[in-house]
View 1 (cartoon, helix red, strand yellow):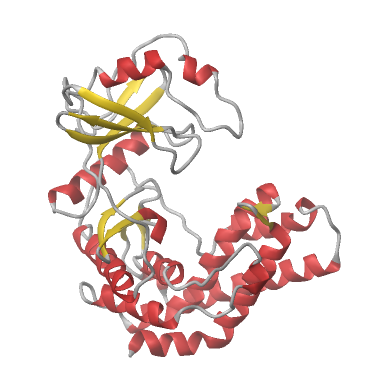
View 2 (view 1 turned 30 degrees about the horizontal axis):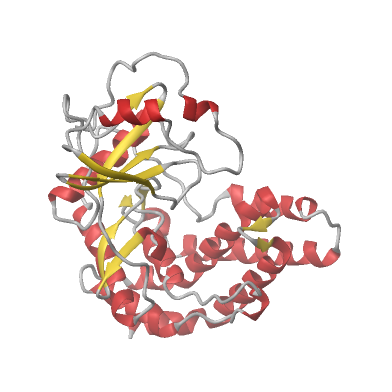
Length: 361
């Protein structure tokens, strides 16, 4: 079901592709939609509405038909390599067969292929799963860790004919080069900016070195999600009902996922004034996330000792790339956001042993 079609139908660029403009959410063209939907057997369609979530470059539609509710997605440019998509789909089909909570892929009606290629674009149709965003409760945090443990357990021996990618936020040269470019990209030669960037780079290197001294390079590798955060999950009644977005999946030590998840589910934000965000994480959520994971898969002592340093690396890496590219982090100004990140990094550096003790307790 995951084999990319050998022949891509020829034709001119669709009207939707011609209309693509930077900054605008892309849409489906009427001809494009009619032809793409004709490849799926979902019965009589009752309604089609835009589903304006996720990347603006990947348009989505919510479709209600006599057979159920579905999400139709056109993959964004750069995310539409058929062989990379095939790897992601093989992963999802394996997990679906093991009853893992995720939206099931709908195969095409002729070849039961999990992707459709038409006019140089790649399309996917998923079952629609209703749910809410992360409720930030201890119960939902525990379940998020438990489901990550289940994900890792089900993929321990997973093999695919498609080569998985590698590389992560840990010890990445691109993070340090991104940091070096920030002072110029922010349009200021201020010594304060350079000093802040130097401090972040030093923390990043020291954290990566510490993880290497713990021996992570020799730890077993398996398929990880590599983007485990609340925005990639749907919840109902404090339980995870679906995990989405498998595009980042790759072959790495599992602790890469665990540490990033511990960061994402314990970090405390606030309003748009990022300087008011606290430097400390929510320790209760940090502990509950790891307890949930432990319910399925036990962590080694070495893995636990690596968590604070990997959290530091993950936080720096997440901030660096958008700020290096655009000077901002979403709607937030880059300089103040980096100042907030440095505050949180300093807390993690000073309190790493406390987090280790919480993880062990």
